[in-house]
Length: 214
Image (tube, rainbow, N blue to C red; front, side, top):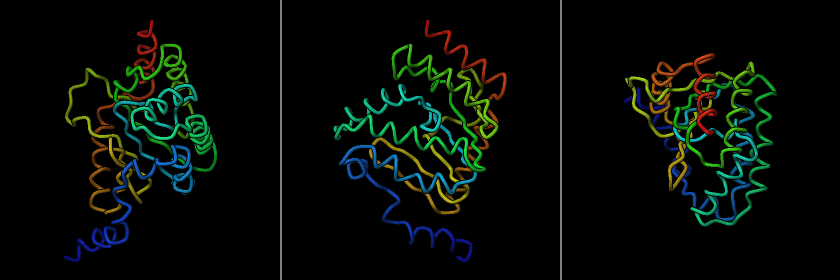
């Protein structure tokens, strides 16, 4: 029982905020959702980010973000404040260049290939990804579609230091604070990172995705 104390304490403290439905968080639009996480971003020193299907918000271009958020607004049937929400998302990208933050980002190759915007916007987004990967604070790994899997693709998740994990579902955002579960996500990230290519290998996959746009 003593070894479960940390998990029990974390559960008791965060039970009400662990599962928050998007319909509650987005009833007035998406802008405040983007702004609400700024304090968490500012205090986090090390980000570990895994996304299987889209480019993560910290690395998005405004045009890509507009297309993606516009689709979310239409699908979720929420008030349309896309322009303000995108502006808030782009503004919080300052953490990439300020302070002592570091970012380990893992993408499935499918995130490069998913055309959530028109080819011109996608080409701009992928070009921006190449530039972001050159930042000293960013480590970008990409898992090729041809890789022999020893770890299956999972839901997208963000690990903030060892404090919490955020997971976005279709219906809700889940906040994980139990040490045992955070450790499991950390192990998952490490296994996925072992499948990824970095540096020249990652750049080659991005360049191939750009070429495939025609």
